[in-house]
Amino acid sequence: MKLIIKLLLNALAVFVLAHVFTGVEVNNYVTALIVAVVLSVLNLFVKPILVILTLPITIVTLGLFLLVINAFIILLADNLIDGFSVSSIWTAILFSILLSILQSILHSLLKEDKK
Image (cartoon, rainbow, N blue to C red; front, top):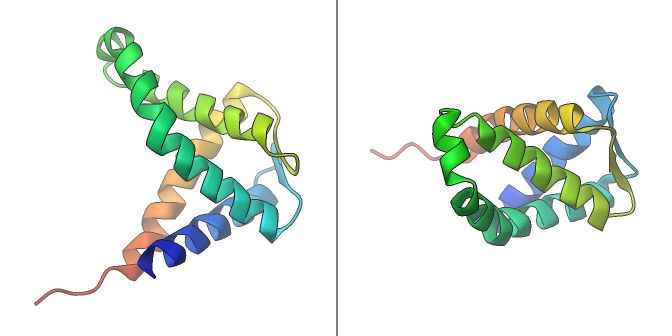
């Protein structure tokens, strides 16, 4: 149940950012939900491979190259999904930063106080 709620919150974050941010377009909420699922799958399977392959450049750039990897994942999702478009690599980098911030805020609302 918690996974479904997280996916819905991620879709909400994608949908809100696409309407606020001019370089990203999402047709409707269903497309935003598909984007959230595809981004989750790409982050699960493709991102670890890219991180391992680009480990030397990530170390040299003190981890900043991970922003480029995140942008590449978003551009890959752009190519896979018809109703989702990102205008450039710089837009994808900024979108990934804003998406991470918004997702962490939304997911912090889900956490229960453990006493």
